[in-house]
Length: 329
Image: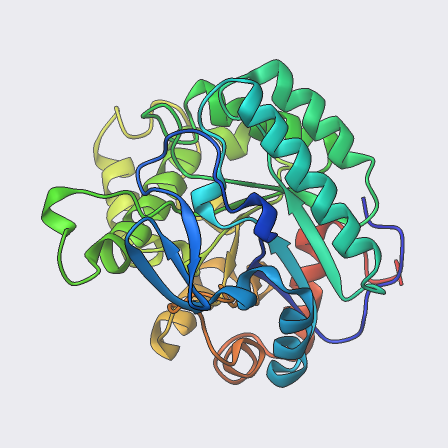
């Protein structure tokens, strides 16, 4: 919950933080252990091309915010840390991260907010964790992957989280996991293609699965501009009109629920951001940075203001995503 006034300025809803003591990630995972090598952060043998301090040091985050003209930054764990496996290790990891995140945002004077973690393989644990997050000052919601147990947002694990988030008035951020596939082994394609495709699949499952119809109050944001979804929306509309199996779970054409979702501005292209604003509407486009990764937008606020909805619209959309009215401060 957020009851304290926020700092002034653009709200960056998509940034990452993980304390060094939690670099030992939960479960087996597809990537390996996160660790420091001479000041650079690695995931297994993969160089993440960022300084270790950028991920874990709050002072570095605040310095970057000042440089980038960001007033408020919403922190979430990197996607490697999503607890996909069941067990006490996952529960303990979630508890440790959520407490550490709470401590960080409580000392930030409204400049930092948090999106917590939940256990994705245990619905009872997830509900308990989300109830606690909903009562924690400075925690705005939860961050989740687009895939769990081989199923997207319409699968039982993630759909349970979405239902609880809507019930508890928590925002949801959907972040891809950069899952490896043989055909994407070279050229960083697991990120350049894989991440957008993961997000696109999640957007499609939410829209065509009728999830937004069933959960009208759900505040959910898809990072990286929704991946390929803006460019494919016309194809989905055509398929919905032509095929009964496409429209079996929803009575609304895809463009209607699409315009009820939130998307961040990390598109790396002003034309793509313009298309996103046209399709979703300026009231649904929020500033994102993807700090501190190499695919981050270096000047998130300036890029979003110059090529997106404008400064005041970005602030208003950010507040709406966080569940804040214009008069809350």
